Structures are given as structure tokens and as C-alpha cells.
Length: 166
Image (cartoon, one colour):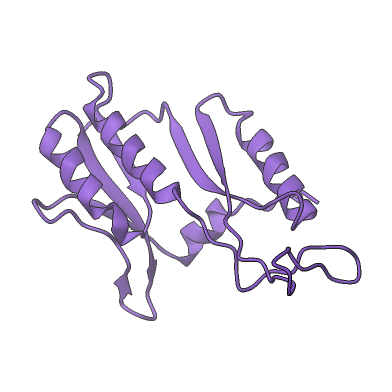
């Protein structure tokens, strides 16, 4: 097979609230700006969803510093839908030969089925592989076999963004 040429990287992730976690918010924006220095990269940030503690009268509770008090961890909402839409959109583009999905979110399996059924672009996945557990959490379409590239701990380390965005 001919070597693929990477022409586009689409990233979808949650964005912390500036009101709840201003430092994480600033780090996310700085990281997005840094990644997008590469013209092939487009980062789409979607606000994280928070469950707030409430006062007796229903208002958002604040701590002694005036910060909103959160119940549990924030959640990404809609990021998987954006990934699914992008996967199908890219796979249906006649100018795209190969789409590689890097996710372990099993909610994307129906979109993988649809992207493969289009028959326009080749579709592959990539997943992290822990040799100690002898399995990866790869996602697969139900309709056909596709190639999955398993990345080990060395590959994970090589991919890490070690920039200090604080």
C-alpha cells in the first residue's frame, strides 16, 4: 500500500468553564492555539457540563473564595456526536482516501458502521494497547473488519504534549 499523507487532524474535546476553573480554561485555549499552529490541525472545544451544588433557595453555591461548588466531575457532552459527524463527513468526502478514528468511545460504533458502508474512503481505527493486560479497548464496526493500529506505552509517551500551558 502507498504511504498515506496526513492532510487533516480534527480534534474534539471538552472545555472547562472560565467561571469554575479559569486556569484549566486558559490551558485548554493555549493548547488549542499551539496545536493549531500546524495548519492541518483544527481543534473544536465544547463546554464541559457541570452539576452545581445549590443553596436552599436554589442558587449556585459558592465557597469562601466565591468559586462555584461542583457536585462530581464535569462531563463532556456532545463531543462524541461531533466526532461521529466528522467521521461520516470525512469518509463521504470524495477527496479523502483514508479516515483514521482515534477514540475508544464505543458510542462511535454506529458512525463507524455508517462510514464503512459509504464505501468511499478506507476507514481505520487506532487504540492504546497495554501489553500487561493483553487487550486494547479498540472499537470496531459491526458490519465489517477494519484495520486497527495498536499503540503501546512507548507510542503513548511519544505522543504526549509536554508543553507547559500554565
